[in-house]
Image (cartoon, rainbow, N blue to C red; front, top):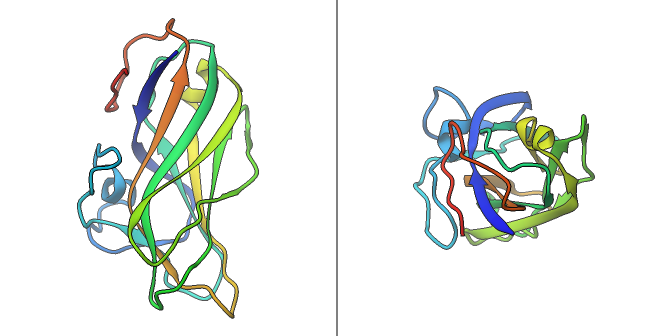
Length: 171
């Protein structure tokens, strides 16, 4: 098995979060090509209202073949304003449908967090891969969420080839 990485390369819908820094587009604020444990730039996207909000990102295409048993989504994030543990969920789009949301376990300190999805993914799943982040609003304890980096770590068989329009590394 080998591991490759892919970064956001476009905004998708719904996009309900706001941009903290670079106003051109959302994905460029969290597409640093940075991998954990490195701390990314301070560009970020986040939430700011009193409703449940989603942010959806297209991911760059990479060649992985047909044997993909695991996709791990990484974010560098924190629950802010007020600083308290919040809920930040993640989901992936493959096989024409969204997966169930998983909790990143976000806290008030910026850190790398991940969620993993196991399955029998194919090249067409990776070609269509999108990632959705959700801040789940609850009036009693829902601080805003701030995300500075996002990428997907894809474990695959060795029949994959070269990436296109993405940062990728084979380990």
